Image (cartoon, rainbow over all chains, first blue to last red; front, side):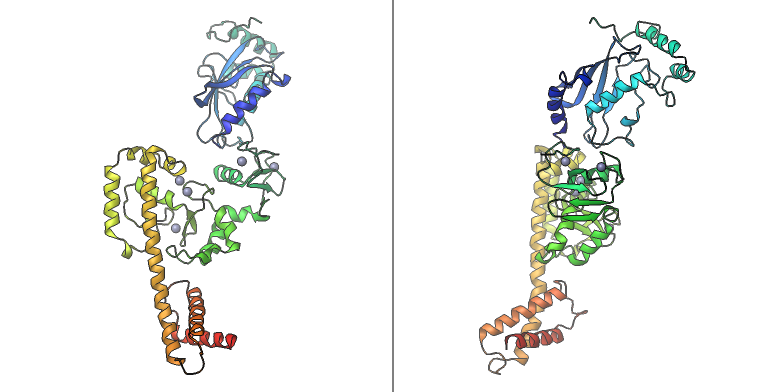
Amino acid sequence: MSQRLAKEYRALSKTLGRDPEYAYIISLAPVSEENLRKWESLITGPPDTPYFGHEFTLQIEASEAYPLEPPKVQFQARCMPHCNVDFDSGRICLSVLDAAHWTPAWDLLHVVHAIWLLLASPEPDSPLDVDLACLVRAGDRSAHNSLIAYYLNGGSRGHCGHVSER
Amino acid sequence: MDSCPICFESLSKGACRLVECGHKYHFNCIRRWHYHSKNLQCPTCRIKSRHLEDIERKVTINLAEFSDANLAISEISAQMGSLEIRSNEVRQEETRWNLDSLECRLCGESNVRTNVFCQECHTAYHEICLRTLHLEVGDFSRCVACCNCHHIFGSSSREPPASREHLARFLTERPGLHAARTHPHRSIRAPTSDGFEVVQSWRLLSELQEKCCLLDLSEHKRKIQAHVRKVLNAHYSKGSGAIATKDQYTEINKAVSRNLYRVSDNKYQPDKFDYDVEALRLIAIELRKTG
Ligand SMILES: [Zn+2]
Ligand SMILES: [Zn+2]
Ligand SMILES: [Zn+2]
Ligand SMILES: [Zn+2]
Ligand SMILES: [Zn+2]
């Protein structure tokens, strides 16, 4: 099972850039080829969301027990305003990343994809950002989206997710 | 060729199938997952599986019963006799599969055959995992105890003090041992330069113990055979007519002794068996066969 991350890495080089489903993934690779347990991914926000046109970095760490245990994944700190993300730390609340819900049949690509889908469908029932969760729960989509856009464009929470040049 | 959804390697070898949903994995991969997740859900479809079919060996096991391994082990340990006596007879075909598939209580793996079974609580171990653990907690004695019920394997009476001293010296003199102690499992799975000496020392120790076992075994056999010879000599002395040739004498001696080893579990148990009476009975049977 120690070869599994190497296998994923090899498979990804074929999938990424070819499969249009994952066109939003700019990169998903180990930080250094020396240590396949630490990965980073750069993704663009999903269309029809305030995240669209912005890029975000995910930091991924697989334990020695991977894939029996889920990888630890988080956004770069203070970059992702989202009701299921702790803004200050970048920590993500997502059931597939829970040991109780994880299955070894998933790989890092699945995980990144699940997180990307979460950007488009926030779950206000397990919030890490109460303000945003309240707006989602109240059904005030436009207030929710404009608050996120405000943060992403350098609003008072600090700024990180920069506007893409493309 | 399909690949295993857990390790992504080819399923050409060691494949098995969850009977309820049909999803295929390597036996070791799915069992490691069961062990890790503490439930029997299929990683692909989450259907709870009850049966696992080993495709190569065409064996289906009931996972619910097998999971706690107790059932399988109690069946096996009944045939194993005691830990010290590892005769070839335990490697009977019908037990082989179970033995190969039991997981070590310490490392949870079944890739390497577990070779220590606690008869008190029916728990399986790799000898090396158990010994490494003892080493880790600073117990250098040759006696190892079950981590679950603390039953002591083997008897202390045959512990050669020399090897214990040898080991203690070995352990204190070697550099790199600290690393091996803090990462006991590393030294088990792939002997690195750190763990290698520990592995070597245990190998040495196991060899010693193996030798002891063989000596012991032959001691038991020798005592049993003495009864057979005594009875043979008393009732069928050469020239009495019943046994014609020296070869016949040897053949009967061998066959009867073998039978007696088996019925007494390779142990000389004079309190349980009247070897003289048993020998006499078996000799009569042999004679009827050859005569
Ligand atoms: Zn596998
Ligand atoms: Zn399944
Ligand atoms: Zn272990
Ligand atoms: Zn083990
Ligand atoms: Zn025990």
